Image (cartoon, rainbow, N blue to C red):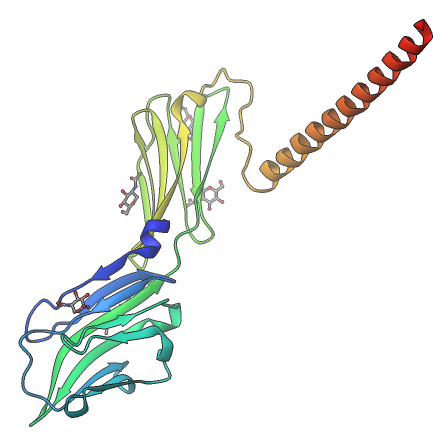
Length: 251
Ligand SMILES: *[C@@H]1O[C@H](CO)[C@@H](O)[C@H](O)[C@H]1NC(C)=O
Ligand SMILES: *[C@@H]1O[C@H](CO)[C@@H](O)[C@H](O)[C@H]1NC(C)=O
Ligand SMILES: *[C@@H]1O[C@H](CO)[C@@H](O)[C@H](O)[C@H]1NC(C)=O
Ligand SMILES: *[C@@H]1O[C@H](CO)[C@@H](O)[C@H](O)[C@H]1NC(C)=O
Ligand SMILES: *[C@@H]1O[C@H](CO)[C@@H](O)[C@H](O)[C@H]1NC(C)=O
């Protein structure tokens, strides 16, 4: 993840007759947008956002680039190849970025559809066993998506749902592990459940439903540990006190 955040995506336009390329980046990332080559003769070079707003203007005659307020301190322009680097991207920076050169006429020399995404949240896998029938139901969910699947001891029905075709939640079995994978164009996270846990003869038929109860469990464990530590300290103190007393008693 950290690596991904540092990653600078390098992209090239696909054809000289500018096609709009889709670009996906994580919040906080940087991206470098290139132009087609060779460029036609020009006097002014402009990077525009959503058709109307100027991001950067370069006047060839003065070799001077001006960044406009929209991305002011977060843009870098390369005077030699006219690449635009956008830094510390936020979701509101999502939109259409176009490069237009003006000379005899205006020509579009690059177009990118940029979407900035948050990394996905981790999914949560839980299971339920019905001892009598040995029915196993596995559920995987996130805030917005969920899938349910029936399993036996060896496998589960594969399930997949998606939102906008870009965010996916999929459940499948791979080398005796049930895997739930939550993904979007910039990241994925998964939760894993070992098949061997799905044993009908198993006593605890319901997995600790994550969230509150796991949190509660942690609190209980922590408190228990704390109490044990405190009593250990007290015991040590009492012991050494006794020891001293005993010693002094002996002496
Ligand atoms: C343009 O120049 C920048 C900075 O030197 C470099 O990182 C980038 O790769 C160059 N782009 C192209 C298309 O050569
Ligand atoms: C840009 O991409 C978004 C989703 O990533 C899509 O909804 C939108 O229609 C695209 N816009 C253009 C102009 O291609
Ligand atoms: C439970 O098992 C029974 C019998 O094997 C089956 O008919 C039923 O559909 C199962 N229920 C679920 C929720 O999988
Ligand atoms: C999965 O099961 C849970 C609880 O039984 C239910 O709330 C949820 O709507 C189900 N999700 C789907 C996609 O069927
Ligand atoms: C999860 O999904 C993403 C996107 O489809 C994929 O790149 C990744 O390899 C998947 N992870 C696993 C463990 O299958």
